[in-house]
Image (cartoon, rainbow, N blue to C red; front, side, top):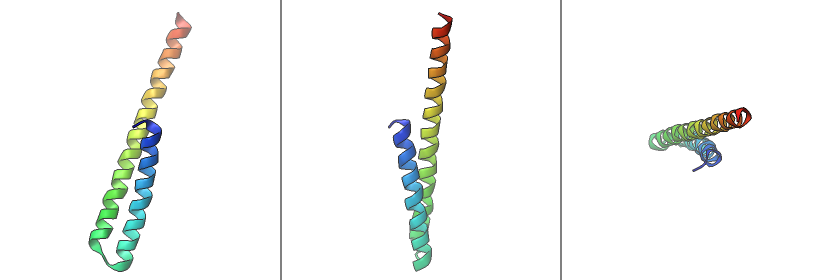
Amino acid sequence: MGSMSDKAAGVANQAAGKVKQGVGKAVGNDRMEAEGAMQEGKGKVQKAVGDAKAATKDAANKAARTIDKNL
């Protein structure tokens, strides 16, 4: 996945996880609440991976532009 798709999937998982936690809490379903917390955590990790990929790509592009200027 690219950085944008990782970020999008992460945000979607975070949102779905929060909803699932809320529903689980509202109906008294501990398992659903826990699944929601795990899904939200997964989303945070996915978004962080996307952010890291974007930062790496930006740094590589900056280095490439610097090299081109020096040539």
